[in-house]
Length: 486
Image (cartoon, rainbow, N blue to C red; front, top):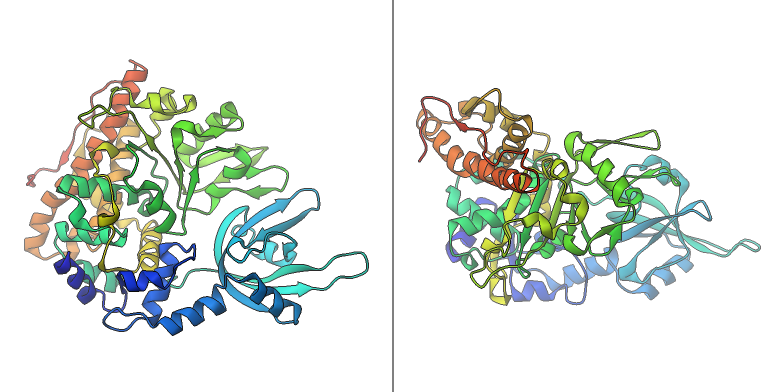
């Protein structure tokens, strides 16, 4: 790891952060995701990666306070308090107002969002957890009305709203494909040395595909302890992890009572964890809505058209044999009944075989330089709208025009996502030298096309096991004439 660690620092001198025991201790006792901690470390660290403890402490105290007394005393003194925090929005039907809480500062009641903010940011200040820079004010009691805290200003937490892609592409060119896989794993806060094979590393970073490609729907089943929940909770604010319990159409898509859109509207991916024990308040309604959404990114709720580019991920555990292979080839048996229907299953593009991943332990946690997670999450978020990589698929890949449309859509989506993740600097063969342009199709085949075909083939096989009307064989996809695989 030492070699790749130094290489990350050299390639990203202004955007690399040092993950070690000393820096991690600065956030002891604070429930902050990696993308926030990395932003702070990057802001207050020297060239050796050592963070200034006093500056970090001052920033946390001023911008991310965890002391309810400090915030309330400043508010009661008539001061407006500006903080960068995690807050939870909830519509109160009874009062017709929208409340918010700041759990980390123990502000759990009598806090409301100003109506003007709700109107200005109606697609952002939706029910659920948010990260942002907010300004609080205290409204004093008036007659029988009690006093309350009001959010009077809001700005989303986006320190890297505009990224220099030329800088990112240039840095990427300094790494081989295998080295870049290590960079991605390190950015996910794990030591690449914990993975024994290239296959394991590829399996691990496949979790990032829904973050770079719009409406990429994925299923991952495997054992416990492979880092699923940790990654999705920490890698990006654009990902929402639903874990255990139940959810509803109102929370995910559209709330008829409050006329607010749900989680799927403004996130890049919603991951439903512990899927085997997960439930929906109205499974039949949700299955109907999900079928349409998974297919075309659209759903109609109460005559309201819901549209989004959010991907859906299902993750959970699956029974394994002593050889760490699935005990039953019918993987879908682990899923709730609504996902065991072939037409619903067929709308997923990608399957991750979590049993191929190593169990991650204390020694698997990264110690060294890595890429700033908040910067990387902004890169992934902005790559979602880049269309050049899909054109690259058409430029390189040949397929039978009579092949199943969903197979084509899935393979194209997954291969395109791999290209964005592993070869972001190759937007077209024309940007490469003559020698590299001749070699690149071979790399594309090995790292993008073949994995995409394989991951979709698992979905197709599961559809076949559910319903024999579905063929188990995939249509043929191959490099166009004039290229050959590695």
